Image (tube, rainbow, N blue to C red; front, side, top):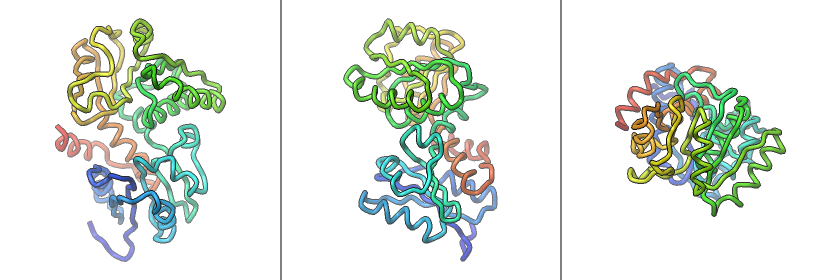
Length: 284
């Protein structure tokens, strides 16, 4: 990579962030597409967020990515929001358009791009969890014409989740059905009618636990997806594969949300296949 007076910067901003794979992904893409850019990881305190965003203009950067806890906090610092960022209420990519800072959320697009030969349009989805990633997947599914969505959260989280779903319905006219994860007969019934089952919770990161009991039976054409990629195969994915279903982990979501951001910044397509090879080697 050649660094000179014309090199433009991009960065991921979060706390903590030192462990991030984003510098590896984006610097590989800059190199492969012969783009004069460099991508860094900035671990900042909350009080420095406004100044950090101002530096995008000051240093004529491509833009930044954001991760926890700044995806929502960054919104007041921006000039514009894309449709999906407005629906999700969170931004993971800021684009510097000649000094105009536009917030996007590429998580949902990245997730659906990572599903091999599957389109959500006209399909039914069961979603486990209602955190940041779940909201991104939800909003994108609605923008992509999903036919029906059932969201399952633990009963203690239902009251916290409802206002977001009501707001989503207000903005899109689409009604999302909400259920308690403990209601196993409802869970089984909804999964039996679904084309896609997504674990958008962090349950399974320990390599031991699963968000659903193994007694649940999957319809044979259902695709199971997990947003977790460490471990590479969660108990949830192992269970789905054990029933003969196709099962996808979250590494593709990580790569394709980055590819969407890269294209917004540079106008170039990220060579995802090439980068996918090195990513899977790192994680397997």
